[in-house]
Length: 229
Image (cartoon, rainbow, N blue to C red; front, side):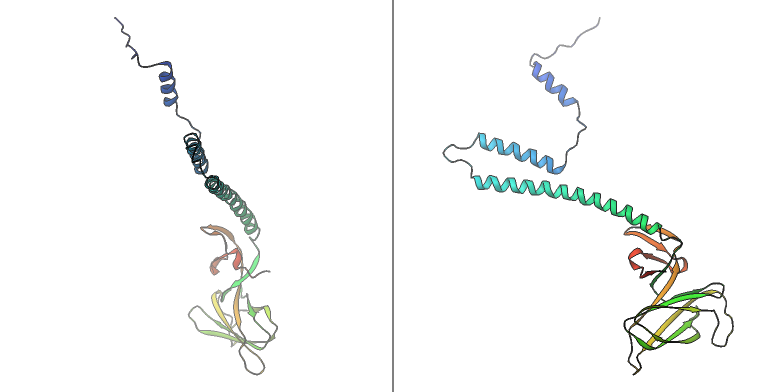
């Protein structure tokens, strides 16, 4: 014979309603600032209801607490806005770097890769130089060519190498390096920076953004590009 369990008499309609509501889990989530605001308002209303009529709450204290609450809420909204802006910036940066594929760029460095007996490099002078000397070395560090580039103006300038050594012998394609010495007419040194020129073959995502892949020259951040040729 079927049996029916007795419902405890203490279970009123309110108890049953509360039990049902407790069993139903809410899927709505609130932010930390919203939770703090709700708790603050609950505590504030409790304080107001139970305050001593002869010694009411200080208006200045309440105003200070409200200001602090607004600050927390404002900071959370600001963080959300910044996250959105950073996301948009990343997308914009991705589009910009993708547009660099196939282009020649100039970045700091002294690598001079030789392909089909052709190589291009650059120099960056802080001020005008009357004598600029270019020295090219092979992968073993041996000097293979020394050339006078003559007078050069301040700023960026380019040079081309035909892959021949000082005796006119055609060297094998490969990785070479170069250095530059610059002086004024009275022999004073001029600050000069070796700049390498490479072709962007790919765009690579890194932990700090996007980098341009220049093949054997390595990978460089978009901000490292001194000039697009």
